[in-house]
Every structure is written in C-alpha cells, then in structure tokens.
Length: 452
Image (cartoon, rainbow, N blue to C red; front, side):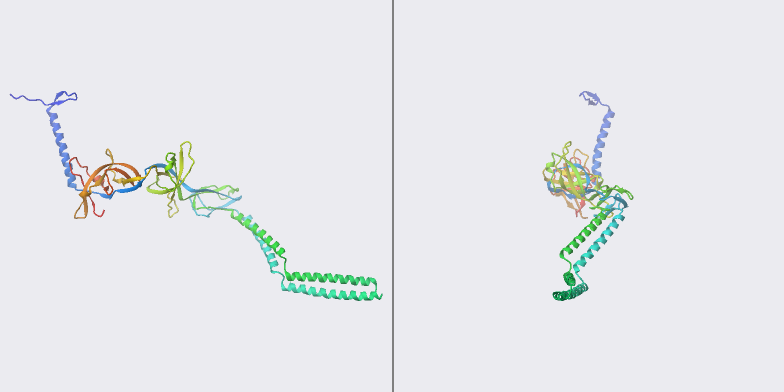
C-alpha cells in the first residue's frame, strides 16, 4: 500500500511546515521563468551584435598634483574713480555706464569760456615780448647807424667852431680888445659843444654795437615768464576735460550735464577687464603649497562650457584673523568680443583648483568614460589581445569592465586608479550600449572605427 508523502517546508525556526501543491507549482514556474530570461537576454544581445563605441588611449601624466577647489571672485585688475581737477560746470558727458573706453579717451568736459579768454590775453603778451626780444637781438638798422653818424659829424663841426671862437676871444682879451663876459660866454659854449660831441659819439657807438647782453637777457627772461604763464593756463584748460588713464569700462556715473563739480569730486568710475584677477582665500595650512607663477585651472559658474587657465600673480601675506585664510590673486587674460563685451565680468563666481600636495604620476580618462550607479565606478577597457579587424574596416574586441576609484580632475579629465596600465584603450562613448556579462559568460564585444 503506497503512502502519499506530504511536501514540507522549513519555517524560520527550522520547524517543518507542510507545503501546499499550489505553492510548489508557483515556485517551479518562477524558477523556469528566470532561467528563460537569462537565456533570452544573452540571445538578444548576441543577435544585436557588438556595441558601437568610441575608444581613446588612457592618458598618463608624469606629474599630477592633488588639487582642492576653492571658491573665489572675478575682480578687475585696475579700478579708478576719475575726479575733476578744477571747479567748474559739466557741459558735456561723453560716456555712459557700461561703455568701453580706451586709454586717454575723454570722459566729460567743463565750461572753458573764461579760461579761454585768459589764454588769448597771455598769448598776446607773449607775442609782444617776443617781438621786443627779436628787436634787441637784431641790433640797429643801417639807417639808424647812419643817422647817429650824421649827428656825430654835426656835433664835431659845432665843437670845432666853438673851440676856435674861444681861442680868438682869448687872444683879444689878452690885448683888452674884448670884454671878460664875452670871453666867458665863448668858453661856456666851447665846453657845451664838446659835451654834445661826446654824447653823439656815444650814441653812434651804441648804434654800431647794438643792445647790451644784459638787456637781451632781461628780455629773454620776460619772454620765459609770459610763456610759463601761457602753459599754466593751457594746462588749466586741459584739466577742464577728464580722461580715462587706461582702457576699461565705465561702471558708475557720478555726475550729469549742468551739474557743478568742485575740485576733487568724482565724475566716473572705470575698471580694467582686459585682464582680470580671480581672488580666492586659501587656508593657512595650504598656503605654503601656493607659489607665485604656478598655473591653475579656473571654472566660472556663469560660463559652464569654458575652462580658464591663469597664473598665480600674488600671495597677500596678511591673513584674515577670523578665518585664517590668505588672499591669493590669480591673473588671467579675458576675452573681449568684437562688440567690446568682456567674457569675464567683475563679481562673477569662480572655482579655482589649487595644488595642495606633491605631484605624482597618474592615469587620466575622460569623465564620460566613467560608468556610475554600481558599488563603485567602472570603465570599459579594451582587451588588446582580442582586437580583430573586420572586412568593413571596423575593429572588434572584448570589453572588460574594470572597477576604479577616482582622484584629481584636470578639466574634462579625471584620475582613475585600478587595474589599468599605460597604453590601455578606454571606451569614452557608447559605454551605455555595452551589456553586462553574466557570470561564466564571455565578455561583451564592442566595435569601433579602425582609424581610431
């Protein structure tokens, strides 16, 4: 007589519990479905063929320093508040906020009518003194010398006549043929004629010799005084126009047409952005590793598609005593559009990757090569021994999934550490098409252009 055995199952307490036939059938169905799914998945991937990918050699850096990202701010390399050097009324404002200005470009002008009249008067005085000096330097004209000579000759004739008349009266007086008063008159006239002759001789000599050196020097000094006064007024007029002393952008207008500005009052604010500083605050524990001249990479949040490279320009040796951080200035060249617009603008948020350790060799891959979502990131590496070339010029090879740990980044590249060697080929695109290989199954096949 056959006894029907009832199936049993074990409970969590290892106590045998009878199983119903319906439960056994469900378990068998589930197991069979799982086996069919595994076989069908492998069949589907096999039917699709190798995944089309793009591969690139792994990149080796002999010296890659660990970096730390520090948030900073884009700042102008130069900033100036242009003020008025004199008192006056604004009659012309030549720039507006946001305008680009070049070096020595006028910004605003003050009223100049009064000082212009002073300049014209000073110029006339200078011309007068120049003409006086020219007259002295040129000396006497030939006609003036001839005139002096004629006067000299006339005075000599008169003097000779007076001398002869005196001699005649002196002889007559000795014979008592004339009076004493007539003789004295003749003597006086003779002496006067001699003095007139001496005066004419001196005037002739002066006409021939020209002006004295001292008189010419005096005239030259007067010309220099008038010239200095004219230059002073011209410089004063020039101060009625405010200029930008470097190329940059107007950020603030402090005045408007018609407004009176006193000496020293601001007119406009200019910043230079052809080159910019990125200023970051570095903790004191890392500041010994920051050296002037080192190149660093910079990312700007507002410009996600750009990676900038700058050089450390200055390490300010004064820490913030509350945060114990030192300001570090990084200089980089800005990009100016054809319309004059700067790509980097003052105040933008920037992230600077500063070296914080010693350099060491490292292997880098593109960030797109990483496959995330598992227990650890993986990269697909090509089995170099399995590479074959098809008739249509495509490479076909096995792809090996290699778990990696990541390290420092360098732009679009990132350091990876794992079972990778220099010269390995890494899948950088199409890795999402590569199917996972079930345990005990051959690795998946991939294909790419032979020219790669």
